[in-house]
Length: 87
Image 1: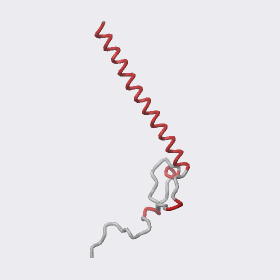
Image 2 (image 1 turned 120 degrees about the horizontal axis):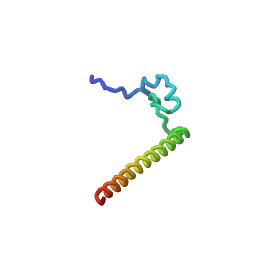
Image 3 (image 1 turned 60 degrees about the horizontal axis):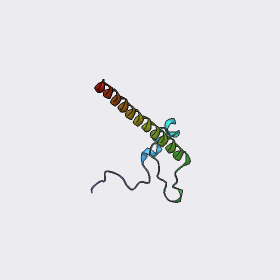
Image 4 (image 1 turned 180 degrees about the horizontal axis):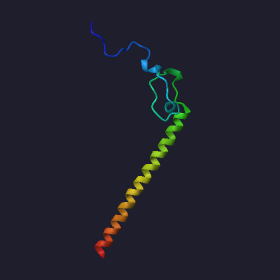
């Protein structure tokens, strides 16, 4: 008899019984595995949406600042090189 590497007949993993830390409860760190909710009860919670909106806004703002910095340094560098070539 061939034994399967993963037991697919169980309803959930053993790791589901692990306790959640404070960082996981606050949504700042990884959650331990939990049972998947399917059907009509499967919903995205409001705090997940809020966290995603805040993080997306932060990434866009930080990316915009980084892009503006790179462009500004290039413009200032080009102006400096142009002054050196002319002067």
